[in-house]
Length: 325
Image 1 (cartoon, rainbow, N blue to C red):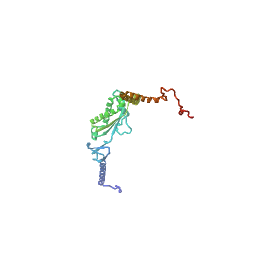
Image 2 (image 1 turned 90 degrees about the vertical axis):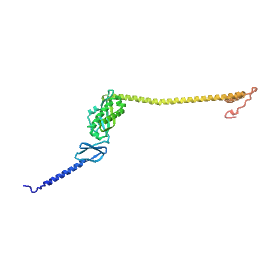
Image 3 (image 1 turned 60 degrees about the vertical axis):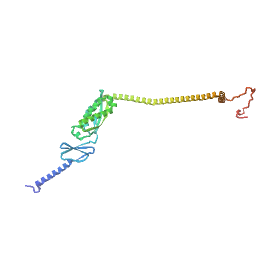
Image 4 (image 1 turned 60 degrees about the horizontal axis):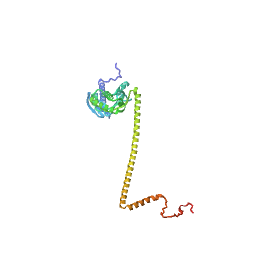
């Protein structure tokens, strides 16, 4: 016997509620799966049924729902990087998360003079072609990692250990960047290489202490050479200045003596010409001019006529004592 308080819902009404619930859920799912946002530094690649359809710029966009169209968002306007031989804590690039042994193998290299070196570097790159990046190569970042290591080993293997560790770092970075850019273009990875930076470049740990001592000795040698060159550059110009000063003084003195001699010669020639015109007059004039210069230097003298028989002395009142008479 049926319970009199039980309320029976008609089958058609019950089926109608289910249909509306399904419709509402379907509409919500359609809305959620058809609206997407592309960040400002990225582009969206839209696939329809797994085939490339278009590239979408940043902003709010719509696509076919229920997985009919899929969107891959790629950070094409952001510089990305891969680290080799080390890993920065908190890094977001999944291709860098290798164990310590793998990183040690990655950074251990052989130079051209058969010496070992530990090389750590960074590759900075951008995604410049999203379609190639997604569809041309299965793992573009993994491929980039392998060819970058190959390029770096090739470049390091062409140089001596001194070039790798000290003076050749910039050349290594530039050559490695050029080689890697050509290979990336050849393999159509959809990536452009911005820069390669060498980080820690050292000899292997067992010989690092000895190598540091050699470097310190070389730096001390360079310092002493620079100091000697500094003293040389300071003393040589000063000595040259003193020499030039003395030379100029000597040249000035020589010019003075020559001019004086030429003046004496001109004066003598002039007097000689006058002497030839009137010998007696010129001789008397020269004698008087000479006596005029000589007599004041002789002091006080008394000149007497040869016929004078005696000399009358005069009292020198002006030269008496200070007390006076």
